Structures are given as C-alpha cells and as structure tokens.
Amino acid sequence: MPTHLEPYIFTFSQLGFLIEGFLQRLGLTRGLKDDFFAAIRQSAEHNMWFTEGSIRQSLGAISADMLSPGRMEEWLSRYDIPEGKSPRSVGIIMAGNIPLVGFHDLLCVLAAGHRAVVKLSAKDAHLLPMLVKLLRRIDHRFAPQVTFASDLGGVDAVVATGSNNSARYFELYYGRLPHIFRKSRTSVAALTGDESDEQLLLLAHDVLDYFGLGCRSVGKIFIPEGYDALRLREAFGQLAHLREHKPYDDCCRYAKALLQMHGRDFFDFGSCIATFSDELNSPIGTLFLQRYPSAEELQSQLLLHESALQCVAAKAPLAGLEPRCVPFGQTQRPHLTDYSDGVDTLQFLLSLP
Image 1 (cartoon, rainbow, N blue to C red):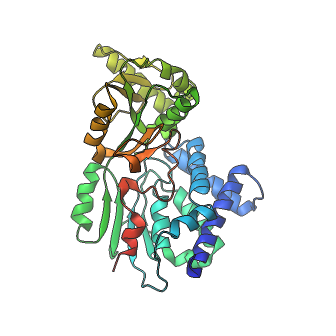
Image 2 (cartoon, rainbow, N blue to C red; image 1 turned 90 degrees about the horizontal axis):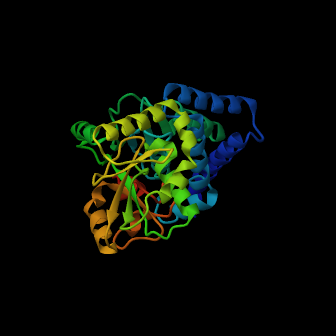
C-alpha cells in the first residue's frame, strides 16, 4: 500500500472505531458522545422514516463494511492512486432516502485526493456533518477537504444521485462537466424453492430494512411455479414489529385497502402486503411476487429489466447477472467495491484531468 494513502486509511479506520464505540457506548469522550447522539436524535425528529434503529443500522454497516482497515486497504490496492496530483473540487449531490446513503461517494472523492463540495438532501441533513466533524477531530488536515453548500457553483465535476425526474435537472445544470448521474433503481430477489428458513428471514430483511426505501431494497420476488407463497409469511412475520411505526403501518393499510377495493388477491405477511404483479417497482408496504416457469425464463425476465436493477438477491449467482447478485441478507450492506449502478466511482474520479 503506497505510504501517501496511510493517513487516509488511518483516519477513516479511526472514524470507524469511534462509530463502533459510540454504538456500543464504550470508551466515550463526553463531548464527542453528545455530538454523536444529538445528531441521531435530530435526524430522527426531522425525518419520520429515519428511526433511531435504522440510523444505528446504517452507521453500524458503514463502520463494519466500509471503514475496517483491511477492507480499505484491499479496496484501494486495486487502483493506481498517484501522490501530489492537483486536487479538483467535486460536487456531491446526495440522496436522502435512507440514512447516510451518500457516504461512499464522500469516501471515494477523498480517496482520489480531491475536495468534496457536498449538497445534502433536506431529508438527511444532520448525520454526515456529524461524521465530518468527527473526522476533523481525528485529523485536522481534513478540515478544508469537505465543505457543505446549497449550490455547486465552481466545481470541476459532479456525482449526483436522485430520481429519474431530478436527473433531468442534473443534466441541465451540470451536464457540461464530467459527471456521474444516478437515476431511480430498485432491487429484486429470485428463489429456487429450496431456501432455508434462515435464508428467507435474511430475505425479509432485504425487503424491509429501512422500510424498503433504498434502491438496494428488494421490492419484488420471483418464485418458481408451484411455490407456496405462504411459506414466506412465517419469515416476514418475524419483522411484524415494523408495523408499530405509524407512517409505515399507514402505507400497509392503504395498500391492503386498495387491493381489496380492486378485488385483487393478496397476502398479509404481518410486516407487509404481498400480491402478484408483473410490475417492477412496488409501493412502500407492498411486496410484489411473480412466478417463473423455468430458469431460462427467469434469466430472460431479469435481463429485460437489468438497467433498472441495483442488485439481485439470490442463493447463488445467476448466469449473466453475476455482478449484480448478492447473497440473502446482504443487499443493505454494500462493500466498498459495490458501486451504485455498476459505475466505478473511484476510477471516474481518478480519471479527472
């Protein structure tokens, strides 16, 4: 590992240790602890979908899956990261669908040696500033490397994440700059019929963690012909406590009423409402199911929608879709090399002139 990357790895790994310690409430300095938990409370109060539990889950995943020294070294060893290259100002437009969803983009910008100009989502305005504050306390040299701004005037490149509609505005305002523009995506799962009860519970987490609001959240499950869909009810029923969150419960009740009004069959899994549909994107509180007659037909269906898929949860990788396939229970725990939309963000940033 090049020596000039050691301060980066050390600083971010220390941030990971701090996060882990805070979440375990071990070895805490009072001022840091107060800032940390205040940001969690403020975020949960500001956004009804950001429960303290989901925020802690996101922080824990970042600490374990992104900020461990070994994983960072393995990730960065794949790239030729030069020392002393003139830094560029890179604008990051962050989404706010799940807590800290844009943290990986910040990691990439700083790893490439650039300065990050961050436009936060109004839905997630407290958590990242708190982490950057901790980062600066670990190493003051990061102070000028990250700024928060309401607009991105004067940046040299842009990495932006949003909906299909917002992507049109990204193109209008920043299309002349080197850029990565991400649009809406969803995720699906494919069952073979011989999954264990433990794997089905992991799949339930893939569907329901963060209330299904992430692009890596599974919103549709492909099941083989003859599969008893009620087998899913036991696994999904173990997460029925999610219905204690009133906004989510309201979505489930609305989905159920709508299906009843239109005379459509459905299953109440306790934690969500499942129904058969050929559509890809399911509403909050609803899980779509679709039967497939053969492995060839399943592959055909998935390849047809490949450009709209972020990942595919499956027991084993599916032919032609290997880069998008992840094991059950891992859709919401992306690793450093799991780039959104399959576009290598770090390589893009290293290629900037």
